[in-house]
Image 1 (cartoon, rainbow, N blue to C red):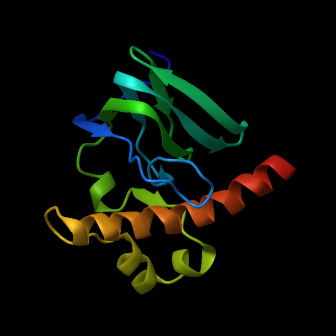
Image 2 (cartoon, one colour):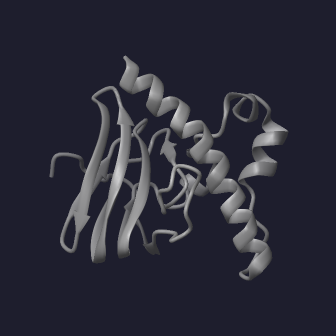
Length: 155
């Protein structure tokens, strides 16, 4: 494997949000990991993953059987294309939930720990309140992501 996953490996099963963001794209919250490598294994549907890295902006198609790797520091956003389902392999199981995952919120939110915590935290459980909070978090992350992507594409 080109990017090994040392440490305790966490597995989770996800579907990309089918909620449309401000840019017309349905998908997840753009984020990066500071020290963890992550892999998506596509188990159903189709979609894409958008990445921002020193290699530039990429829009990588995903279909059943695809594997996408993200090394630390790579901003990634899962995009729904039709019933996209993935199994996530995450290095250092539990670390992302303990602060390794960083959303691409606008600079003023990233610079203020209280604002960041308020924007990133979801209420416990499921239901309309949790879904509304997840949408707000995703939309704020997309806001910052689009500025980053535009700057990267412009050089």
